[in-house]
Length: 211
Image (cartoon, rainbow, N blue to C red; front, side, top):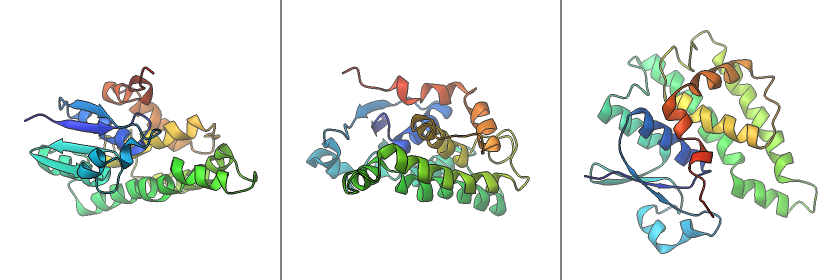
């Protein structure tokens, strides 16, 4: 049964799943959904993703949405190790993941930043918005990583869900020229992650449309 990822190359949530599928070496077809042209709001995408978002993953005969829930599904069905075995460890990894995916990401979603810029009367730029809110969120993540539980990656020395969330967030910070020097732990972990072939292969530059 084929696996299909409905993807937009710069979507942070889709980026997470590209990383996860690569780490698990799950062969899959990628079907682009162009957010810039509004394809995500069209009837075909709404039929598979009622929120009109990406990513959507077709796997195991099911159609799944919401990247974090999909990561947990992959962890449970493939013994991926994205969440630790112990409840306390799982809570910590979820907290780090949620701090990125549910706190930083929604505020810094392009549609939110674009709306703020367009309705600010010139007082807000897209870059200014990102440079205001991404560092604020990363500062919290950096403090969370300082609890002595981080290692090579966010939780010990095994790549997990928090790392999969961190990669796209650091990518976005770089894209918007956020100063990352105040976040040495995050940057060190990111450097370790970028040594992994699956992480490098998932980079947006490798999935950018030709046109």
